[in-house]
Image (cartoon, rainbow, N blue to C red):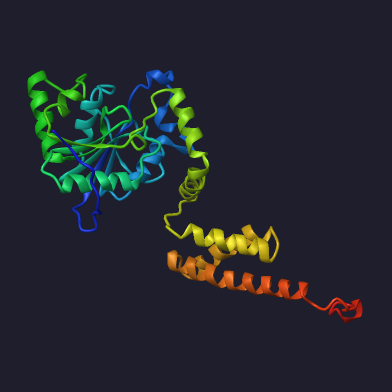
Length: 306
């Protein structure tokens, strides 16, 4: 067993598949529909699906439901057979050599962490790479694995026990060579209502709320576009200060509309924002020139004088 702190990206890495386990009983939540519980206006399951959006195939092991993006559905037989049986059902529908395995209750999991896990797997000879939580405990449902190692492990367990139903996940992971990556934030899962409350509070903190809101709004509106938010915020500030406060939201709306007409994309947004910012600067300069005007100007000299 090893521990490492991976870095780098996966620009030329092989494709991966994702399996998301979302069919648990949520007993500590009183049997609530945990994958559908909202944190920051988004269902927990949708937040996880966003984090692995670049997977070649994503399989959710649970009863089918509406989701923010298309997925494949699978179910262990019988339903409620536990995480090992659920993983086996999901794995059956995948083909990639690398597999990301996630639970559906990870409010702070992001795409960067998924890439981090896969990068660490690519750089090692291990069977898998998993996160550890704030207490140093393994989180095998926030992990990247070599699919062949999982298939071998599941086959061995099934042969030994006559099936996978009811087996604890540690019976599978305990036989694997795993690399561990500490991450108390991305590994945070929501098992209780107190956990849900803590997650909802954290995303409203100053350092997180804007990114969380933008992500939620893009999901709600069906937008898959990464733009420079600082550029738009600077534009809104310039419009508010140089023109009038209501000009800020109206200007950013018009920038989005103009970018859409220009074909969309980050470049179109940046160009529309640049032009609007120049216009706002011209307004600000005119306002400054007016403030410096000679004090002996009379009403009759105004262009709107009757």
